[in-house]
Image 1 (spheres, rainbow, N blue to C red):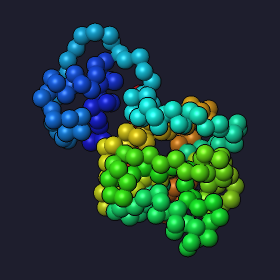
Image 2 (tube, rainbow, N blue to C red):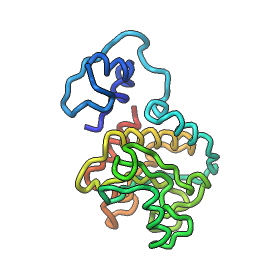
Image 3 (spheres, rainbow, N blue to C red):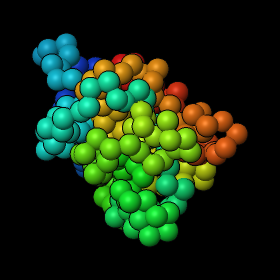
Length: 216
């Protein structure tokens, strides 16, 4: 559960296309939980690309690398869910501006879609990240000043994140860790950051799974 052809290919030193071909798959997203896969061997023992380059589209990675990060500002990364079955960065921005009266709009630095309101796995880079502004996703002003907010669209109290969301999240977190010089110990969730205040990002989001992926 939560695995992907990209992660499997990286683990066994092969490529997604070779896995697709060897198993007669329709595409890279057609694997199922419990499915057995043939692993083609041969060639180099491991790909040379860092995982963020495998998990993120090249244009997104290029855009992320082009943003100048304020040195020493960011101390952690906090994961949220939207708490809704569908949603978009544009819709969240409207709510945060009009209903929560946030001058800078969207409270998060990034939003990752689930296919309902945004494309599945689509990563939206908010102005708060582009302009290196404080977040608005946590209760305390001090926390917002030093923590990057990532929101996954979905209600993870009732369902799991999609495979593409988890792939994009891992890739995004890896790139942010690299650009902000953070370790995986600085990656947490809203619930863990503010205990007894919220269930966000829900019982079906596992920060342990994410950290296991980051340790590969």
